[in-house]
Picture 1: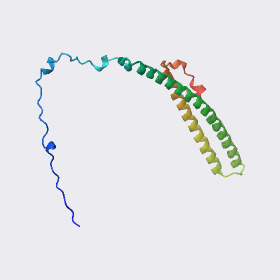
Picture 2: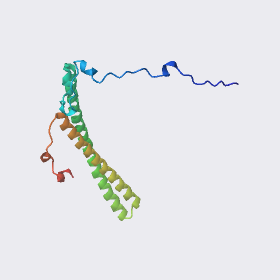
Picture 3: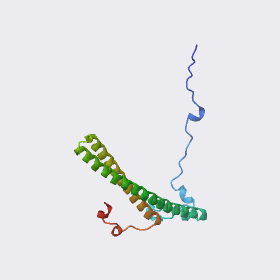
Picture 4: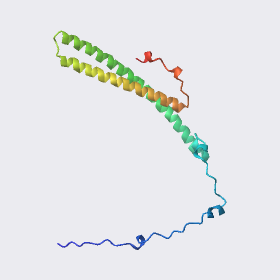
Length: 162
């Protein structure tokens, strides 16, 4: 079996770059439609899509805003139910820790059952904290989607969150 080695060949188009002539420095001034550059800070912020004057784009932005509000409201409703169920799981796991501790002290169960119950209790408490974090995040997203402000005086006291 013979193997033929092919040497790389040069293509004529890749042999040399195209000739480029630099324009004279003042030639752009001859064109009368040039605009002076504005710093980025001077550009309007906010509803950037309004510069296009497109009614469909404006309607799409409004629908997106409504969708964000509805999504956050739905998240808050679901997370409230999830938080109630998780809080019940925390209470149940605390009761299980007490029960297994009493059974261990009475000699009916090994200490491994107490440790397992404590591990379950800790996992349930961590899940409850995570759900609370997600609820707070959804609340902030809802306020942002509605376009409202945020005032720390409206927050509940820390003692009521425990």
